[in-house]
Length: 359
Image 1: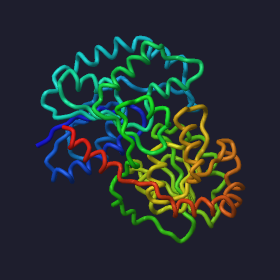
Image 2: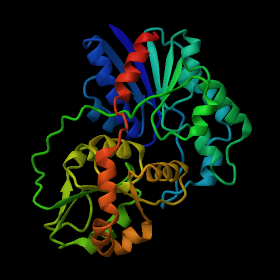
Image 3: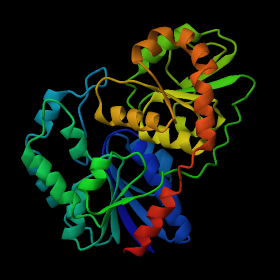
Image 4: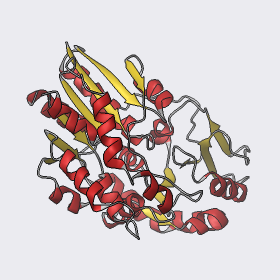
């Protein structure tokens, strides 16, 4: 029986979904002879819902970034949070001294896990679409000290392997000698949602896990209420509910509905992008106040012809006028590109096999 521990940062749902996909493949390849412990804090309940049975530890894993209400980085709070990061990091490592019961560690993406692997003489593996050192290096003015950045690089260099999917910024791959590029990391597609009908054009609107776009989405929905040829599916808690605006249950994962859609509109979170590419569903990505990850995602996916872009103001105040023009023009090429792309989606299997070959 293999036993391993997963360290998750406290940002969003993407890394939870990624790790669930890897767990599915590890279970399959080992004929269900593994057990895991997952450690995170902010989204622990969602992790429990997605993973199901397992061991869970409610603990903040030292990595997060602070935002303003519009979703842009709060530079002052970030600067304050990481001012004494080296001390926080050492304290975290000292409290995690004995991990001898585990055969390996997975980090997505918590730097200390790699140092803990070295300390406990067990292999550690990283999974990420971007690294925090890259993310913070893109903020202006610089808010993270060179000492902390050096510590990030030092610890990540101690991983046995760090797996990066397609559309990872090339400079990240080049800066990590232990990098391995893998296909997109996608869960098994076995989600049947019987409430979905295809009698009209179905559109899923996806917010971030922390609801950064809620007010903008509410305004956009008020514009499209009553347009019969479209049916919009949104999370629960929005104001403009009507016959063509369908709220989804609070405890369900929005990504599970993508396969039943004709178009997905949302912020350019990497798991949303990955699922849409895997299921060949056209995307309309919403711009966001300066966020290095989102900016890079939009740039790289647009360059491949796999998504279109809508400015936040246009989405908020002109969605009703924008959609008919978009569907009659740009959408057609986007649909063709999605149906014909050759992006591989077996990243979870590649990672699981590589882990098992290196423990």
